[in-house]
Length: 240
Ligand code: BTN
Image (tube, rainbow, N blue to C red):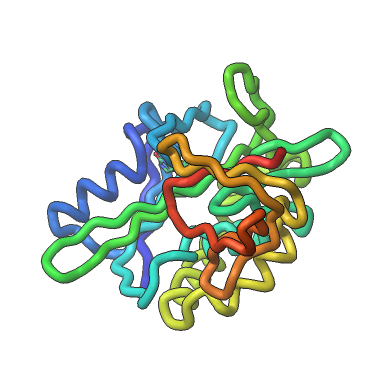
């Protein structure tokens, strides 16, 4: 299908806007880019803050009917990473990271939401990518920036690289599921063979070593009780 591309100087959140439209029955495929968000949102109810000119913030909205939704955010992250740079790593379930001699920095985050209207489901796939370095005061993970890998790159150039492959990746995921993405995720997995702590958001914690993702995109953690697949979208994982 063809995609409309829409650019707004300012909006609360591109995800929020596409969710509003979908609930009102507007379900056409669209890529909505905001130069500035005033209420950007991240996973787990967190804020996503970015300054005009320093980041690429957009959401792709489209009707989608995969057999299994789990793994979609991984497929999105894989596509965005692959279309930008070979050195970009992935942190399950949906962060893009830089990891080098300067340490580990978060480069991008993905927030996927769905809305239903009638019997159609509409996927809103939000991507926030840091383009230029910024002050990381108050953030759990200091931010990385795409300009560290691609000096001088700007948001329109980054969008031009990621947009078409992303649409293709989402369509491939809908048709084929996560299987074509498994090895590609594992090749960039920043947690691989590391000790991790998995929080379920309700005080529960599992420790073990991370061993990549399964063919459905579950994180495989080797714990004292054996290999455990982690699937919940509410969990957060941190390296120890
Ligand atoms: C995360 O790391 O928790 C996900 C961050 C997702 C941010 C993007 S920016 C474009 C879209 N609109 C939002 O409000 N959030 C996503």
